[in-house]
Length: 310
Image (cartoon, rainbow, N blue to C red; front, side, top):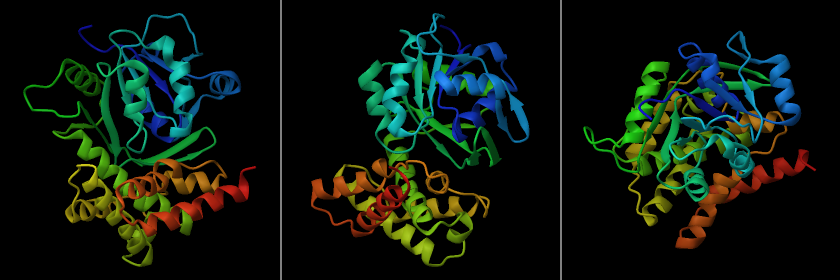
């Protein structure tokens, strides 16, 4: 494979729909495959997906579809749906397919490597995307950037898979960065999500409350400080400067924008607390590091879920 021509996507939520909409402006629609089944597949076929005022009807591929494997497979589901997404996407994964996870947290790459092998999986995360999902519609004011690569990347010595994805993102006009240390980058994004997502979900506040330098920002900062502590026990060098940079990123987002976890709570959906606060609590327990802020945020979010999920 000399270049990526076909892309398969599992997860047509806020992240997946925004980036797929951008790609569809520059690559042929028949190069795109959205993996979906059952009622969801029928709904996408009938209604399409509404992104920033435009309805797009992406080609829908049900699990087991007998086409040749895709050149690039993107996973953008919630973490608790990843196991099913992996099963549904297997017919789209071949020996040369490059796989990227756009999920939050620090766990999805491990799961994809276990399922498909380390030689296919790149590390990746999304930074700065401001998108709100309602039904089958998404509104995005800031596209953000996909940071990706092998665990370690040296300019001028990028792996074949990294070069292939770089070429595809260039042709599809998808903003990206190839970072030297992707493990550190994943933990930095994890730290920001742990602070902002959980605090916003508990307080029911948009990004603007974090930008006011009040109590919401202080709570988020305290949660992130606990991530810095457990990260050091995991051999990841996060610092206070990384917290400051994360808060500065929040300052650049739309004040009316909402974190994905707040959107989940407002829509009475299951949240990703398992890969945020619960993960910090487990790591704190493993390393003997107190994480009281995350412990409380985690319990409060579980209580919220219990109030609306049977």
